[in-house]
Length: 257
Image (cartoon, rainbow, N blue to C red; front, side, top):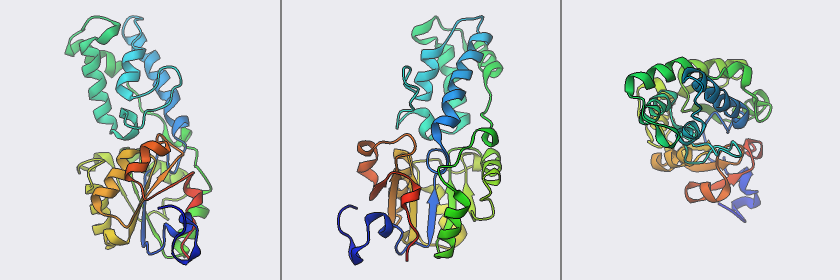
């Protein structure tokens, strides 16, 4: 969606016209992605080295997480972009067992010991920094008749704590999380469940996210509009194939008139 749109509105303003439910991704869409994850990857590397008798596995960690070794940027299709934490942990354990280019294989039992000793989840309450004034943003959407839900690759407990810390828990009507037992992104199951739960058809729903998996999920679900934001892992060329509209951030999504 670009250029002139019906009614003379800007593309950003038009994006939510006819939308009754806006489903947002969390990390990279509502909160700053790099602040949450870059430091965590570095600390995980340090902990793995300590558990592995001082031998560092930095290249292996970055490969599993999909993070550029030099810049720390998460690749749009990398592990951290949309993979549940439980799967990342298992993938890292398998990679450590295999050894990779940084050393010989250690075997599955030793790999699990190393990863179990090093693994830790980031503290969502301490690290979450909102992209904008989320209570004000969500309140404006609600006042315009747009209901709000969240679909995330994070688990439910940290997601609920994060939304509570950001003072928007009461404004978000439903959340779909990685450990809820449904297929994860880019499968459309989360959107389908949210729409069914809230009684809003996909044709009256918007999906807003920062990763290709977010947008592919929206496209597969057949939502009214798929919006990409540039505050997380995706850039314009990466998001364009599945997006109806790409904006700098959620701030550009003004409530429909």
